[in-house]
Image 1 (cartoon, rainbow, N blue to C red):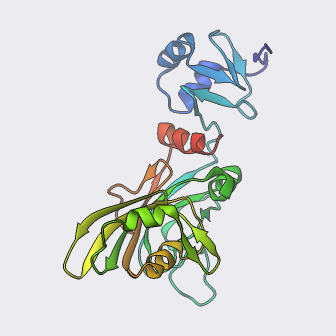
Image 2 (cartoon, rainbow, N blue to C red):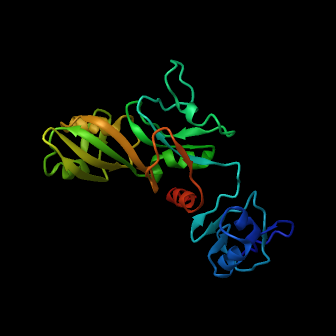
Image 3 (cartoon, helix red, strand yellow):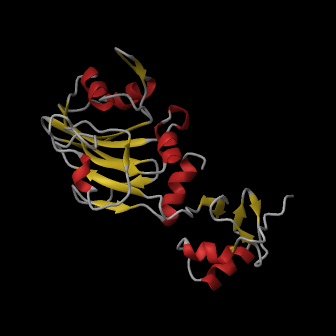
Length: 247
């Protein structure tokens, strides 16, 4: 086992406290309990010093973000806003919601202008890459109001797969939330990232989308975040997001 101690580094409990995991004493207890790994190795020694610029630290299996210049935000994108930081046609864009932040942020994935809901913004390039890479299969959850009464058995058909013009698509989960005389409210969960995938899928099965909201990306939920507002993803919530893509 390689010694993770860096003589000229910073005490591990100080690093953890600085990352918001509690007081130094509380962080000492976390270390002593064997809940901390540094570069993949469990560390219990309270005198351990690490280089916070290079150390990869996990607590209870969740990555701790040590670089306070790295930020990830959740945005509830309103309808009518395009998923770009600067639109050449002058349409409302994402820039207006982060214009007070000093970081240069970019969006993770896209939502079409007519779709509202959860969008992630970050300056963490590796996190963004993994969240959008098909191999990590990060699930996205949508709440869709669709035309017509959804028949029993549609969920099974969608899970088995539907052929679209650019290839087949399978949903990971399909739940009917409410059925009205001429509309249905359904929840669609899938790991596909193709353009307009939910709209094209529901159109193909005869239930065009009237309204669409993305409510979750992996472990991150939209919750009660109001349209046009952002919140910082940090601590355990950020750790669960990073764990979802093996960081």
